[in-house]
Length: 210
Image 1: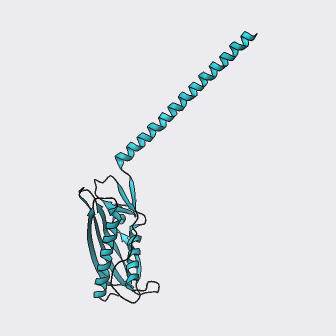
Image 2 (image 1 turned 180 degrees about the vertical axis):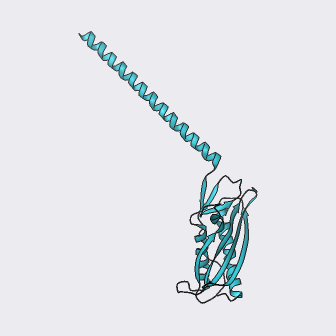
């Protein structure tokens, strides 16, 4: 009787050990499958590239002074209108494996930068105005393909309107270059934008547009 009980106990222990081994093997296979899936995902990311966000802490810098009221309207982003990029996407070289995005839509970023520069110059932006500045960004492009430096190219058309009448139109282009480092992206975008803003305000003042 005691011998039979001992044998039954040994069989139970061996059965439990077999079950444990099976479960451990299943967990090992599952872990391996997860590792294989993660590895495959990393390979896909490496092959296709990934998106990178750039936050531009824009600060107005122009030294010009003015007075009166000026209104602003949203700027169009031509590359988005033509379905070449998304509203927040910066144009890049075709060989680039990484897509570059601002943290806000490029048209909105540009219009806000203009408001900040006009405010710094002394113009009132809160009161109604019969002179509205808007326009189109025709190029907003960052290139690091040379491997030696990075360059930002900006082109925009500014328009000052009063009702249906165009009072003033002005084209700006700016090219900014810097070291080939990721940290330069926001700096170059900020410098190019500030360059166009200052030159536009100066040209508009010279033409008595506001």
